[in-house]
Length: 584
Image (tube, rainbow, N blue to C red; front, side, top):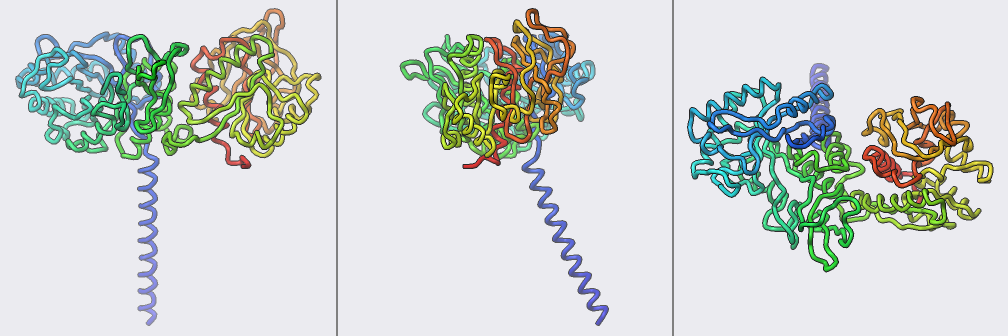
């Protein structure tokens, strides 16, 4: 009997252990599927000067190399720049660099792939180039087999010969990467015969239409041609490409009618629109006509979520230098490489407003502050397209707590509440979990302010000194652990401004986390009013509240620097999404 009981106990224990392992396996599967980090492939061209940040992608495809005139090797455009790109691996040892061969209008593929000896010689030369430049692989961008639309030679046998080329390249490259760029429709290539040789398929899901059609819409609608990004992915899956080899293309540029761009201050006379069905932004002119389709943070974030939801291998973009404001690349990096879908998460998929913002400014303030305020309002207007929020603008601080509680974030642009009722409402709002982003003069709290709680809220003493006239300064990022500063360099030059120094410094407050400070290397700085020494934090958060104070905001240069703009954006996001204490 005892033996039977022991066997029963052992059996029960084994069952429990098996169930435990099953649960652990399911948990691991859940984590791997939902938390898996994706590849980010950036095309970097030979003709641009920009040196990429090697931390915002996993792969660089250097464009371009070409099939040489004798059809048996490679010519590389701007070898010196290729070496510069490969050298970025010193900063990011995990970075993979490939040479992309081809591009629109690049021919000689058909002749090379048709002859076995040429094909073999070309493959051998690819291996030579990989070894010589210490590359991680080759990307073939043949646009397109069997087609002469780009002014190149072609043959009906190109599709079959493309497979032979992939096979021969795989044999020569061994464990090195072999990828290809493909037309959105998945035509011209027999994927079922060649996918075994290919590591990644970069789908060029852009340039799929011209006005009045959007060239990179995610889903079909009246503003799309027959092909969309989602249709491109479905076409490749149907053609035999496994989802774990699919890399979805995203453009960092727009396509539109000549004379229209999405550059700052160049959109006068047009209206920015958002298409709920196609999940993309576009511009219309004063007659309501579609004049440009492009991408913003919101649409890129939604596409990144599509990549995650459909378990694709990752995302690709053309071309690194097109994102002059560095916004789209950062969205892609944060979501796909770091799994940080929070601020951009497409769980909201653009259908619902995620939060509400109040912008407060004072048109009667000194001219330099007013100029900053006007630029800041435009800045947050553009940001609203990427972040999915609505905003109101006021020239006074509400005196009602009920009014303030309609907003998840209050952005004070050089304006403080002056009336007693407005101050009480603001204090209650913050103590009940409201969000606040304050710029420059919102921290000015000398003996004439007569508001003791402001010092407690800011976490510092009164105003002590400032530099004059305004000037640019070297600033130090004190921590890269905070979401506000994590994507910033360790130091950068902040554009010209007047900066306030406080005493005691906020650093002396145990509840304050200093994020950015003026480097002592600047001392002395100023001409009329000179700061010679002392602790000089300029960005911080008082952890007792949902707030960030930014000491910038004087004059018309605050938004000329991409790094400082990223700081502003990160601080805004952090305040907006740290809102679990908000009382509604």
